[in-house]
Length: 198
Ligand code: ATP
Image (cartoon, rainbow, N blue to C red):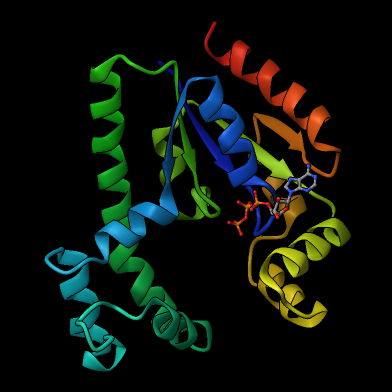
């Protein structure tokens, strides 16, 4: 069974495309979900984060306040690096075990890892192919503004914090142009799915 890494910038359409792939019979590992699981109380990642950032990043119920943590590391590159050093290796390990578990179940036709920063995290080592979801910049800005209720400059800020879309294209074994209308995108995704499970 093949493992595909699905990557693309904020609001490029990874979730939308993952849903299409799930309907076709793929198992999706969503790295946002993985990071939430590993930040739960009782996990080593939780202890390491609280150890470094202090109790100030906890909510009253003892959970990590992800928004607060996000605003701290967004403003401080060194702290972001520390957070990444705590979370990324644990996420790769967790994903590796998930892949083994899904393969042994033999229930799915394809495994898809949905990750905005697939290559940056080192998850690319676990996949057979990388599919990059691309949207042109003005479409990306419009979609992020509409989905997240952000202003033009807020959307641009979030987009600019990530790898430029053109650079990400270099890593793609396949490119999904999600600037196109959804029915066209669906047709391309179906074609890629059937090719991948051949
Ligand atoms: P993030 O990394 O921020 O979670 P994402 O890559 O998962 O984003 P989506 O949430 O799938 O992106 O898509 C962003 C927005 O664009 C959503 O509101 C979605 O409904 C819309 N969208 C996605 N693909 C298309 C398309 N081909 N045509 C029109 N709208 C689209």
